[in-house]
Image (cartoon, rainbow, N blue to C red):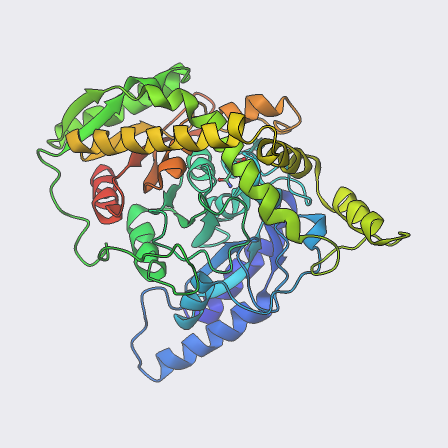
Length: 454
Ligand code: GLN
């Protein structure tokens, strides 16, 4: 079939089921069909296509796209049309990737269920009574329901891996610095990283190869250390060492633990050796992450003042009132909570007690991982302690929600690459994910490991 026919099929499916799933917040049918036409013309001329050329895909709504509304699923950015493309989109656009639309997310990527979105949450493709996960829930809901072949999300504390785990998909958080953050609307800059959500490890490797490169427009960009695909996924893992830290299994639901243990057996059968070690620093990961991420967010979100972007309150008497009302009306509850928490931990009287202490602990977590990789090649853990949450999860206690990020946030604290791979189902038919963590810039080795399991 032609690229136009394929694209139309996807657009038709979106039209039929998106109103229920709420995966897409913007559908870009004109852009998609225009690109598909270009690809068909290339095929007609007998030209060779690039790996991602003509493939229908989606972007999370915090990745800037010229002249396509980019809202971070917040009222404050409603109607905002970027005047430039994020580097990842610039790269994919050159490959004639077919952009079907922008997908739903927790507001400003703050959440674990997609339910803090101004547009409401996205449903889990396996069971519509459950969430797709967050914050990149829209991408996972779309890819899991075959409303896109793949999508790019962002992962600050698990937002690619957790929804991938909940929806039975592969979610990669690359090494910090390997994929450009230019044009990714910032949440917590020292943690944010863009990564793909796909149905296979091979697809993930192809996309990683395409999007990971040095970008002078991102001050923390480093590029990758060699591409992954092109026959690099089939290296034997015989004799390689898998590290298991018992702290990652504390508080994990029994069926999730059992599923992970079975995956460990699969690796043993493939010739990998298991090494047990302790990572007691993990108990600090959630508080360290939430203190530092909120501190960075409070600074990053200072730019939404009603003057430069999106929403502005209609009635005000002076400048201060305008800014105050714009931010109070434009930001949702969870975003406001985090701005206040972040401002508090950065305030002069509390800086040392919270922010500085958290930075110190971040250093000790980085060190602990460094030492772990002296004795093993890959660390294997659950991705999330449970399977997908029932709908309306976020309306519960926020601390309870934060604690579910325990397995994913350590990786962002240390800037490591990690991938979530489906490894089973619970009794309700909801997917379970295992997480593989690699050493810095060993994304290729990590994806090879994951591919061997599949
Ligand atoms: N759930 C985490 C948070 O709420 C992670 C979100 C993310 O990775 N963007 O901050």
